[in-house]
Length: 208
Ligand SMILES: NC(=O)c1ccc[n+]([C@@H]2O[C@H](COP(=O)([O-])OP(=O)(O)OC[C@H]3O[C@@H](n4cnc5c(N)ncnc54)[C@H](OP(=O)(O)O)[C@@H]3O)[C@@H](O)[C@H]2O)c1
Image 1 (cartoon, rainbow, N blue to C red):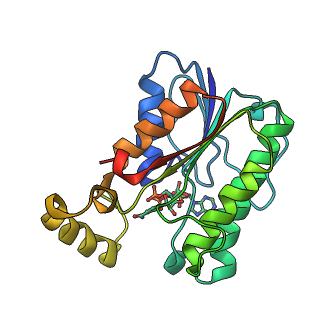
Image 2: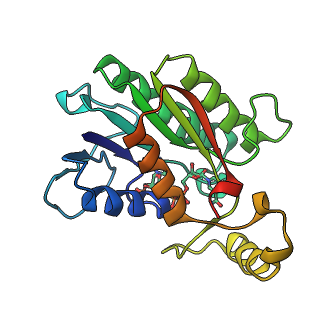
Protein backbone atom coordinates (compact mmCIF):
# COMPACT_ATOMS: atom_id res chain seq x y z
CA UNK A 1 0.00 0.00 0.00
CA UNK A 2 0.95 3.63 -0.49
CA UNK A 3 0.79 5.46 2.84
CA UNK A 4 0.94 9.17 3.64
CA UNK A 5 2.16 10.04 7.15
CA UNK A 6 1.64 13.50 8.67
CA UNK A 7 3.57 14.52 11.76
CA UNK A 8 6.35 11.99 11.09
CA UNK A 9 8.89 14.03 13.10
CA UNK A 10 6.79 13.97 16.30
CA UNK A 11 6.72 11.48 19.15
CA UNK A 12 3.91 9.31 17.75
CA UNK A 13 4.81 10.10 14.14
CA UNK A 14 8.40 8.86 14.47
CA UNK A 15 7.13 5.48 15.69
CA UNK A 16 4.58 5.45 12.86
CA UNK A 17 7.31 6.05 10.31
CA UNK A 18 9.56 3.32 11.75
CA UNK A 19 6.68 0.82 11.90
CA UNK A 20 5.61 1.63 8.34
CA UNK A 21 9.19 1.42 7.03
CA UNK A 22 9.50 -2.04 8.60
CA UNK A 23 6.12 -3.29 7.35
CA UNK A 24 6.29 -5.25 4.08
CA UNK A 25 2.63 -4.40 3.33
CA UNK A 26 3.63 -0.73 3.00
CA UNK A 27 5.41 -0.30 -0.32
CA UNK A 28 5.66 3.52 -0.51
CA UNK A 29 5.58 6.19 2.20
CA UNK A 30 5.09 9.89 1.61
CA UNK A 31 5.80 12.01 4.68
CA UNK A 32 5.31 15.75 4.06
CA UNK A 33 7.43 17.65 6.60
CA UNK A 34 8.33 21.25 7.35
CA UNK A 35 12.01 20.42 7.99
CA UNK A 36 14.02 17.88 6.02
CA UNK A 37 14.51 14.35 7.40
CA UNK A 38 17.11 11.75 6.32
CA UNK A 39 16.36 9.84 3.11
CA UNK A 40 15.40 6.17 3.45
CA UNK A 41 14.39 3.43 1.05
CA UNK A 42 10.67 3.56 0.15
CA UNK A 43 10.33 7.01 1.81
CA UNK A 44 9.63 10.30 0.02
CA UNK A 45 9.59 13.23 2.44
CA UNK A 46 8.84 16.50 0.62
CA UNK A 47 9.47 19.70 2.58
CA UNK A 48 6.26 21.72 2.36
CA UNK A 49 4.63 24.86 3.72
CA UNK A 50 1.50 23.66 5.51
CA UNK A 51 -0.11 27.07 4.98
CA UNK A 52 0.20 26.56 1.24
CA UNK A 53 0.16 22.82 0.51
CA UNK A 54 0.83 21.85 -3.11
CA UNK A 55 -1.68 19.71 -5.01
CA UNK A 56 0.94 17.20 -6.15
CA UNK A 57 0.62 13.68 -7.63
CA UNK A 58 2.13 12.21 -4.44
CA UNK A 59 -1.18 12.76 -2.61
CA UNK A 60 -2.42 9.71 -4.54
CA UNK A 61 -2.27 7.00 -1.89
CA UNK A 62 -4.28 4.26 -0.23
CA UNK A 63 -4.36 5.82 3.24
CA UNK A 64 -3.40 8.90 5.25
CA UNK A 65 -2.37 8.67 8.89
CA UNK A 66 -2.16 11.99 10.72
CA UNK A 67 -0.23 12.50 13.96
CA UNK A 68 0.33 16.19 13.32
CA UNK A 69 -0.50 18.54 16.16
CA UNK A 70 0.84 20.98 18.70
CA UNK A 71 0.25 22.23 22.24
CA UNK A 72 -1.39 25.47 23.34
CA UNK A 73 1.96 26.60 24.78
CA UNK A 74 3.84 26.03 21.52
CA UNK A 75 1.07 27.44 19.32
CA UNK A 76 0.90 30.63 21.40
CA UNK A 77 -2.80 31.34 20.87
CA UNK A 78 -6.09 29.49 20.50
CA UNK A 79 -6.29 30.64 16.89
CA UNK A 80 -2.82 29.27 16.05
CA UNK A 81 -3.57 26.01 17.89
CA UNK A 82 -6.79 25.54 15.91
CA UNK A 83 -4.98 26.26 12.65
CA UNK A 84 -2.54 23.41 13.32
CA UNK A 85 -4.75 20.83 15.05
CA UNK A 86 -7.92 21.40 13.00
CA UNK A 87 -7.19 23.20 9.74
CA UNK A 88 -4.02 21.33 8.70
CA UNK A 89 -5.54 17.82 9.05
CA UNK A 90 -8.62 19.04 7.15
CA UNK A 91 -6.52 20.57 4.36
CA UNK A 92 -4.55 17.36 4.04
CA UNK A 93 -7.72 15.24 4.13
CA UNK A 94 -9.35 17.30 1.36
CA UNK A 95 -6.24 17.05 -0.84
CA UNK A 96 -6.10 13.31 -0.21
CA UNK A 97 -9.78 12.90 -0.98
CA UNK A 98 -9.40 14.83 -4.25
CA UNK A 99 -6.58 12.45 -5.15
CA UNK A 100 -8.52 9.27 -4.45
CA UNK A 101 -7.54 8.49 -0.84
CA UNK A 102 -10.36 6.58 0.87
CA UNK A 103 -8.82 5.77 4.27
CA UNK A 104 -7.95 8.34 6.96
CA UNK A 105 -6.64 7.78 10.49
CA UNK A 106 -6.31 10.66 12.97
CA UNK A 107 -4.47 10.84 16.25
CA UNK A 108 -7.22 12.64 18.15
CA UNK A 109 -7.57 12.74 21.96
CA UNK A 110 -9.50 11.33 24.90
CA UNK A 111 -12.53 13.59 25.45
CA UNK A 112 -12.71 14.89 21.88
CA UNK A 113 -16.15 16.44 21.53
CA UNK A 114 -17.33 19.27 19.29
CA UNK A 115 -19.65 20.56 22.08
CA UNK A 116 -17.03 20.37 24.83
CA UNK A 117 -16.61 23.32 27.19
CA UNK A 118 -12.84 22.76 27.05
CA UNK A 119 -11.14 24.40 24.09
CA UNK A 120 -8.65 21.56 23.42
CA UNK A 121 -11.34 18.85 23.46
CA UNK A 122 -13.63 21.03 21.36
CA UNK A 123 -11.00 21.53 18.64
CA UNK A 124 -10.29 17.79 18.56
CA UNK A 125 -14.05 17.08 18.38
CA UNK A 126 -14.57 19.62 15.61
CA UNK A 127 -11.70 18.06 13.68
CA UNK A 128 -13.34 14.64 13.99
CA UNK A 129 -16.74 16.06 12.98
CA UNK A 130 -15.39 17.91 9.94
CA UNK A 131 -13.36 14.89 8.80
CA UNK A 132 -16.51 12.75 8.95
CA UNK A 133 -18.25 15.20 6.63
CA UNK A 134 -15.66 14.48 3.92
CA UNK A 135 -17.02 10.94 3.48
CA UNK A 136 -13.95 8.70 3.68
CA UNK A 137 -14.80 5.02 3.17
CA UNK A 138 -12.79 4.20 6.29
CA UNK A 139 -12.18 6.78 9.02
CA UNK A 140 -10.59 6.02 12.39
CA UNK A 141 -10.04 8.28 15.39
CA UNK A 142 -7.41 7.07 17.82
CA UNK A 143 -8.11 8.81 21.13
CA UNK A 144 -5.17 8.60 23.56
CA UNK A 145 -5.06 10.14 27.01
CA UNK A 146 -1.60 11.15 28.20
CA UNK A 147 1.00 10.04 25.62
CA UNK A 148 4.05 8.30 27.08
CA UNK A 149 7.54 8.47 25.61
CA UNK A 150 10.77 10.43 25.56
CA UNK A 151 10.65 13.82 23.86
CA UNK A 152 13.55 15.92 22.57
CA UNK A 153 11.82 19.07 23.80
CA UNK A 154 11.05 19.88 27.45
CA UNK A 155 7.39 19.59 28.50
CA UNK A 156 7.64 19.83 32.30
CA UNK A 157 3.91 19.50 33.04
CA UNK A 158 3.53 16.44 30.79
CA UNK A 159 6.69 14.93 32.29
CA UNK A 160 5.35 15.46 35.81
CA UNK A 161 2.01 13.90 34.86
CA UNK A 162 3.81 10.95 33.27
CA UNK A 163 5.72 10.30 36.50
CA UNK A 164 2.56 10.67 38.58
CA UNK A 165 0.36 8.56 36.30
CA UNK A 166 3.17 6.01 35.96
CA UNK A 167 3.30 5.64 39.74
CA UNK A 168 -0.44 5.41 40.36
CA UNK A 169 -1.23 3.76 37.01
CA UNK A 170 -2.18 0.34 38.41
CA UNK A 171 -4.99 1.85 40.51
CA UNK A 172 -6.24 4.23 37.81
CA UNK A 173 -9.21 3.29 35.59
CA UNK A 174 -7.61 1.95 32.40
CA UNK A 175 -8.86 4.87 30.29
CA UNK A 176 -6.65 7.28 32.29
CA UNK A 177 -3.44 5.27 32.16
CA UNK A 178 -0.47 6.41 30.10
CA UNK A 179 -0.71 5.50 26.42
CA UNK A 180 2.77 4.67 25.06
CA UNK A 181 3.46 6.48 21.77
CA UNK A 182 4.45 3.20 20.12
CA UNK A 183 1.06 1.61 20.98
CA UNK A 184 -0.76 4.59 19.49
CA UNK A 185 1.37 4.41 16.34
CA UNK A 186 0.74 0.67 15.99
CA UNK A 187 -3.02 1.17 16.39
CA UNK A 188 -2.94 3.89 13.72
CA UNK A 189 -0.98 1.79 11.25
CA UNK A 190 -3.19 -1.26 11.90
CA UNK A 191 -6.31 0.84 11.23
CA UNK A 192 -4.84 2.14 7.97
CA UNK A 193 -3.93 -1.37 6.81
CA UNK A 194 -7.27 -2.90 7.86
CA UNK A 195 -9.26 -0.07 6.20
CA UNK A 196 -12.47 -1.21 7.92
CA UNK A 197 -15.45 0.49 6.24
CA UNK A 198 -17.21 3.13 8.33
CA UNK A 199 -16.23 5.45 11.17
CA UNK A 200 -14.39 3.99 14.16
CA UNK A 201 -12.88 5.24 17.42
CA UNK A 202 -10.10 3.54 19.37
CA UNK A 203 -10.40 4.55 23.01
CA UNK A 204 -7.49 5.18 25.39
CA UNK A 205 -8.12 2.01 27.41
CA UNK A 206 -7.23 -0.02 24.30
CA UNK A 207 -3.88 1.80 24.03
CA UNK A 208 -2.28 0.84 27.38
N1 LIG B 1 0.75 15.06 24.46
C1 LIG B 1 -0.25 14.30 24.85
O1 LIG B 1 -0.23 13.71 25.94
C2 LIG B 1 -1.43 14.11 23.93
C3 LIG B 1 -2.55 13.48 24.42
C4 LIG B 1 -3.63 13.21 23.54
C5 LIG B 1 -3.55 13.59 22.22
N2 LIG B 1 -2.44 14.23 21.76
C6 LIG B 1 -2.40 14.58 20.33
O2 LIG B 1 -1.63 13.62 19.66
C7 LIG B 1 -1.06 14.20 18.46
C8 LIG B 1 0.39 13.82 18.30
O3 LIG B 1 1.05 14.04 19.51
P1 LIG B 1 2.65 13.96 19.61
O4 LIG B 1 2.94 14.04 21.05
O5 LIG B 1 3.20 12.85 18.79
O6 LIG B 1 3.02 15.34 18.90
P2 LIG B 1 4.46 16.00 18.76
O7 LIG B 1 5.54 15.11 19.27
O8 LIG B 1 4.37 17.38 19.31
O9 LIG B 1 4.62 16.08 17.16
C9 LIG B 1 3.80 16.91 16.42
C10 LIG B 1 4.06 16.77 14.95
O10 LIG B 1 3.29 17.78 14.27
C11 LIG B 1 4.18 18.62 13.53
N3 LIG B 1 3.78 20.02 13.59
C12 LIG B 1 3.49 20.73 14.71
N4 LIG B 1 3.24 22.01 14.38
C13 LIG B 1 3.36 22.09 13.02
C14 LIG B 1 3.22 23.14 12.07
N5 LIG B 1 2.91 24.40 12.45
N6 LIG B 1 3.43 22.86 10.77
C15 LIG B 1 3.75 21.62 10.39
N7 LIG B 1 3.91 20.57 11.23
C16 LIG B 1 3.72 20.81 12.53
C17 LIG B 1 5.54 18.47 14.17
O11 LIG B 1 6.53 18.83 13.25
P3 LIG B 1 7.95 19.43 13.75
O12 LIG B 1 8.74 18.22 14.20
O13 LIG B 1 8.49 20.07 12.53
O14 LIG B 1 7.67 20.39 14.87
C18 LIG B 1 5.52 16.98 14.53
O15 LIG B 1 5.82 16.20 13.40
C19 LIG B 1 -1.32 15.69 18.57
O16 LIG B 1 -2.40 16.02 17.74
C20 LIG B 1 -1.72 15.90 20.02
O17 LIG B 1 -2.62 16.97 20.17
C21 LIG B 1 -1.40 14.50 22.57
